[in-house]
Image (cartoon, rainbow, N blue to C red):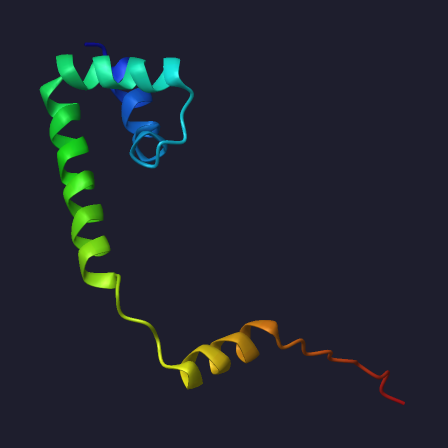
Amino acid sequence: MTDRECAVALERLYEFLDHELADADADAIRAHLDACEPCLDAYGVEEHIRSLVKRCCTGTRAPDTLRVRVTQVTTMTVVVRHTPSG
């Protein structure tokens, strides 16, 4: 494997994990992972982290009061006007 092939595979790893690649691109990444142990290790780490996050973060919903507060804060617009000093 060349450094460039590894760089491309690792650069597209998240798209691969998210099933966002065209079939041909996913097949190329899959073939690279089958042939390159360091990249396969990186894939395994990322896949494991995603699995842990998914397991730990699903099923629990934020309280409604928190959801309302977050929505209010993220949609609030502040207009600041400067007046010329006279």
